[in-house]
Length: 74
Image 1 (spheres, rainbow, N blue to C red):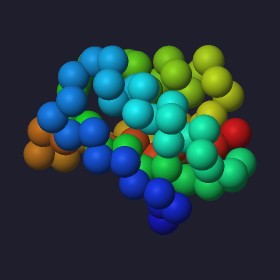
Image 2 (cartoon, one colour; image 1 turned 135 degrees about the horizontal axis):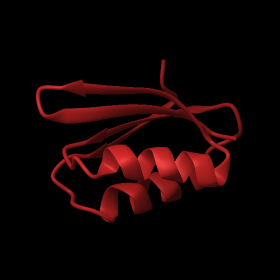
Image 3 (cartoon, one colour; image 1 turned 90 degrees about the horizontal axis):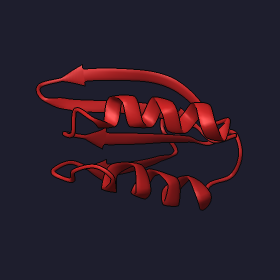
Image 4 (tube, rainbow, N blue to C red; image 1 turned 180 degrees about the vertical axis):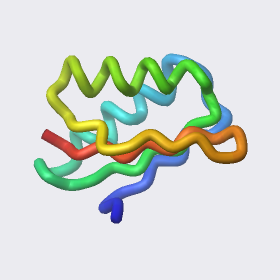
């Protein structure tokens, strides 16, 4: 279960990733951020962001045109 939720629906690249970075910066290590996006580019962007920052991408779910990411803060 997520500790925080970020709804980035309707935002295009690079806004979902920038908002994700900002939200994670305010969270403690081990907490889970749930990100909701409608931008297909966010799938690769979120994965690359997590790889670069050491945050853990727990899951990516596509559902009704929305992409839902669960990220554990490093």
